[in-house]
Amino acid sequence: MYIVDKIINKCEKSSRDWRSGASGRRTIQIMQSDYDRCGKSVLISEVKELEFRGLIEIEKWVTRGSDVDIIAFRVEKLDKFYELAKSEGRMVWPKQERVDYYRGMLEAELGKGIEKNWIREYYRYLISRLDKGNFPKDVEKLELYTCCLRGIDELEEPVYKRIFSKKYLNNSKKFEKEVQGHLISVAKKYWDEIEEDMDDKTVLSQLLLEEYAQELEMKGPLRLIIESGGKMQSEEGTEIEGETPPDQEIDISAFIYGVTLNSAMLKYSRIAPKQPDIRRIITIENKANFVSVPYDPHTLYIFSHGYFSPKEREFLKKLAYILNEEDVGYYHSGDLDYGGIKIYEYIKKRIFPELRPYLMDVETYDRYLEYGEEAPESVLKKIKTVGLPEFQGLIGRMLETGLMIEQESFLI
Image (cartoon, rainbow, N blue to C red; front, top):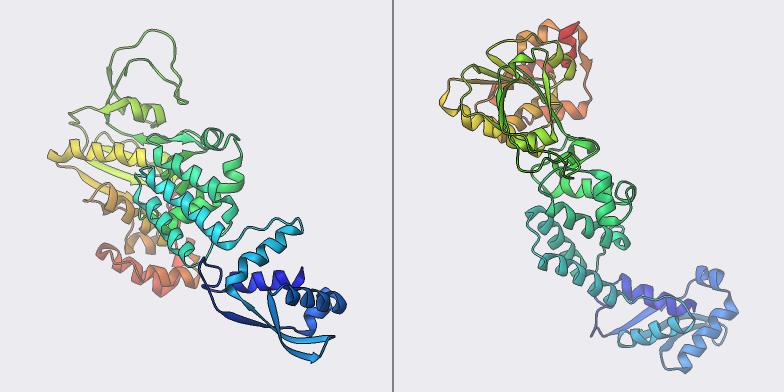
């Protein structure tokens, strides 16, 4: 019924008329567009029937009996209009019931003891919006979202994205197709661990969701103790049959071209309590530069690949703790651009507080200026907001030229 739907829509768009216990008299003006959509005879017939049932009043006719101008109804009778719509066999879900349903879903999630504060903050925001009658975007997928957020809250170790999807959504590709984009947006907005310029893959890595195993590449004099940890496990978490090997210490300095620690190595190895040969730690943003840097017996080079994942951060913070009594310098070498400076800032804030720039100065910038690329105005505006004192000279030079330089230029 056209007029019934019009009344329901008017109430549901209101800030209060859809609520239980709402009351008041409302009017609707019938326009020519209504006649065009419904058909004049059908609309007039419906108006007369609703008037006969005592659900509306005809406040004003243009031509009595054939052309209505204004109708009036009572908000207290909204339930009757819902019943009429349902009587036609249509699926009608009153707004108050929808709000109650989704609010109950979110309150239930909070009641399950969600530990991550950013998820709780997101749920509280959604509840506050529902209380005002505003539904989340893609509200019909809210159950999928809460299911995955519950899984993310439970994660303690990195897991392959498709295994996570199979466990929580019973389909290995459903997370990527229907949930991933939304959760990345939520994490960027509500979790302060996420930087604005992180790409999607990096954000997922911060959430412990991986497309493939985490790998931390390094080159230099680091000593590790590989733990037996009881039964050996694969990266997928399944036990490997066979004898349990004893703990053993290894010195990766033998691998002068570098070594890769996969996620299992990060989990089942610990840093030896004595690291007598390390005098400098240099994190390097780009792979080509990391591979090209020559081996130094007193320098531990670490490929940062952008932003370190949570497990990598944990490993490196343990290393910094062990080296706390030693005279060790911490440096980062990255792109001479906004992204490179933000990665430096992230490492300094979350891993190595004593971090200093390496080959990220005005002299280096001018040396490779011919390889500079023009920066968008939006990036130049953002780089003005960087408050790190060690970069003010470099930033001033970037703003003068409008150019940014990628680290790979150093290898030309």
